[in-house]
Image 1 (cartoon, rainbow, N blue to C red):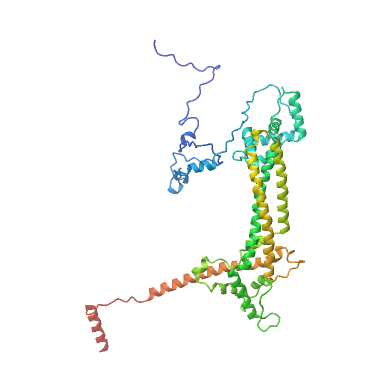
Image 2 (image 1 turned 60 degrees about the horizontal axis):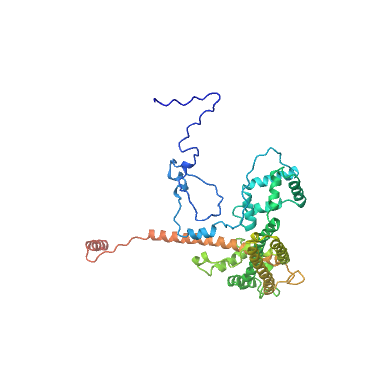
Length: 475
């Protein structure tokens, strides 16, 4: 039969053959991947990181130049099942719209939105990089692992207004053969999600409520704990006692200032301005140093400050009880509005779209009501603690009453004192550390200078020689 005929040579009419694939194939990264493919036991929530690949042929010139990732590898984890349960993606058994296969049509799609509006909707739709079914899943299940909360908020903000929907639906009814442009189609599909606006609105209320209630709780907890520190902390009481002792000593014999049982808080910020004769030490410095002398150095290293942290005082001074009250009432009003929307969704949704919306919203509203009740009570407790603290310090308010006194008036008297005391505390610790180091060096030098005494055995040759030398010196 003979040898097979040679392959046909390319002509001007036939395309040139494809070049030979490079080593490793057309995908250069495939040959560089060191790790095996991992197949999770269940669909997992994605982690949006940027993958780094360590080249197999990497030959660093020094060990320090070796990528850290070449030393990092997967570990065998015993709790991977627990991890899968915690971070797997929730799968809801429901009918998910199939991905629509776009068919090329020679008919030009209809544009109903104005150019700027169409551009904004189109840009958002393309920037999501997800199938529309994922948006539906996020809305129906409140699962933001694929479509983030920020993306849902953006979608909610660009949703179609009633007039736009009317025009879109009118077109679909009168001219179904002419397709919608992509922005119009996106808005129409959003409108087909059962109670889209109400569901997303409820979701946003839930997230905003949780953030706000946590901030309110931290605000009230800070001012309550600060008041407790000012009234019950033994270290602070001792520091104030030192100030009282020194002040009475300085005012000895003065009929108007001496023999005081206490003092107005406005003096606290002025202690640093009272200087010694040589102007080298301030009264506040002396007070803090006197307090620190009661402890040894090792105890002081781990000892807490005898004054509140300046940052906590600043946050307490920024509290406005009326604003906190208004914030709680605003959350309460929003929650009632959300409950109305929830009821509207449940009444108008078909059975397949009721859950998990109903279960999650009922749990949220119940917990939210309990949290609101707790924070309203917390607010009243904070007010009482603040008034009690002012009374204990015999604070003379400029307001109509102690109850009407803003926290800033009282706590600002403490802020500078606490800040200066903390600065002095740190400097004293540094000074004591240097002092200890110098004492240690001095002790080491003394040991080096001491003569080395060697023990001499009785009746030894060395002892006899020393006795002979002593006799010679006496003669």
